[in-house]
Image 1: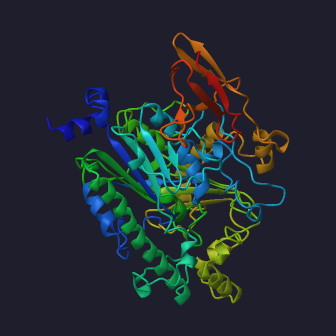
Image 2: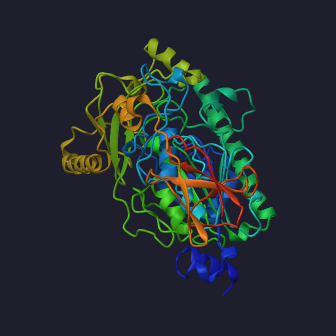
Image 3: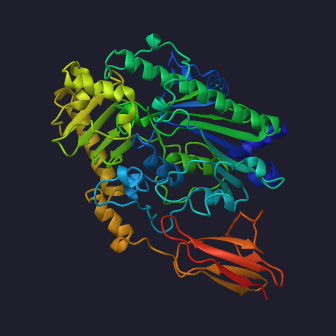
Length: 536
């Protein structure tokens, strides 16, 4: 059997990874982009120019039903780093660490405190000897813990790993972010604005067509940046031992897309390429959510996902064969605007439940108002120049429920909630949504202020107490009075280098006179003081 085939079979769980040898374990290169929906040529968008991603599609698997829980980055990234629904862990309020001007009155910047036992999933990968890097966006709703990555920042790179170590590396491409619509508006266009097929919720207007062309041009640039990262792996001779994963962090950047819990905000492209092109060119339509991605990455590396994760692996040794029947969405505050919606979707239909019925789905978000087409849409609204489909986003009051046949109506323009032929399906989805809220969202009815009070009593960020080092036999054990904390440590003032901290996972072997410095870590809480212990 060829070496690459052995590696692949081990990844798929058909033979133990231990039989392959530690230095032969597969790497994972994870490349994310921002805010594009499925505007990729290989996902059916004929306007999109994405030759490199199209080539990856020929060599890998396309997942056509991957959903985030909300069409905006910070809550999505909380899910992507924990494997949890963000609404269940207090992380569904957009960028709670953000600038005060983007927060409502009475809410000051804060970090989400993860419940006991929940960790960044990369800790489990580091425990297995992988060198884990993130370049560079985190945006998890809490400061990236010292224990999450070997390197995190603009210079973080798998090339810095110690010789022989496998790597898990994430690179985040920001050129397609919402902000780049106005920041790159004067860049040369890669597509003809008149060739773009506008969704029905946008007026056919030159300003809007220009902004859409900027989006497609940014996607073209992202496609080139994607390939540069792949080429680095190839040039290092690692391509035949590296799994490549690519996806967008939420749906499109445009009005009525970003921040929405419709198809336009939640549906994203996702692809994976195996070293030997396993299932090359295949399309997978199983229902998947962002919470499933951490569990799947662990499974690909033959690491059992922790039981607390809401996500389920859809690949690897711990793949869950029973597919999801439903995916879910939840929206709360985004920047300074507060809203409240939930939804459930099966393979064909979406049910949306609205709160705050006196307001419209449109909220005057200051950040989005920097986009030229947003200004243009407001001008047309004020001139009463929008048609019925374009007015739908601005209409108030809004209905208590919405129900869409997404196969027939992918832009979700026609609310069928009152159509009697769908009463059984509507009842089914109502029950599914009620069950999801009851099982996973016990605090759904509370305000953000109450959520904050639970995590930061009296408005104060919790601080971890000092950890302890004790000698047990010939090794040294770290512990904390705060059960559930993780530990980062250095020996004699350094890890792999002076800025690197090891992740504690088992008793440490020290020589007499060695100094071990260690700190207790818990996402959302302040680190403990750094304690130093000298080996006897």
